[in-house]
Image (cartoon, rainbow, N blue to C red):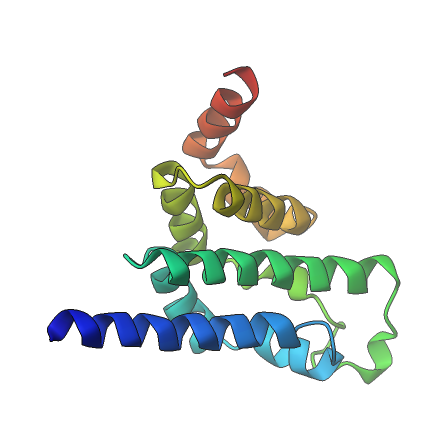
Length: 154
């Protein structure tokens, strides 16, 4: 019985994250609210990436990638910052990449054999790499460098 509760909870998480993923990119104000939600993103997204249910992990990795793509697209087409809710304009590519989210992405990447999940995580990091904060996280992470070298040369 307890397993069923866990599975239905995972389905709810998966559905919620998939719904947010689909909505990203349709409305700049929504994108900013999601990208800068300092309550939800830092708390829920790392946990979803490390969830024991594969469907939740897939949904979370897609969400991280989509969030980075929406921000990168806004940056590349020079969105008018005067209408932005956040001073300085929309910067969803930042992914609010705090230490917990960065660590969760690395841990999931290290533990995961699922190629699509690994691709989503690498694309998200690549899309966000223009941000100096992300560059700092990447530069100080010997594990990431080793993972990338192993991927390229194996």
